[in-house]
Length: 43
Image (cartoon, rainbow, N blue to C red; front, side, top):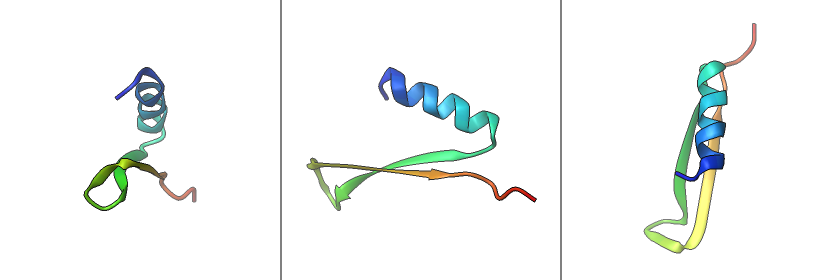
């Protein structure tokens, strides 16, 4: 992970969220990445 993603991960952890990183096209990392962010629902 680069520095930017480390900072994003730290912020997400403080909100009890997570980040997932996947290949944009399955099994072809050269075609880009998909960043998926999950945050808990506020009540």
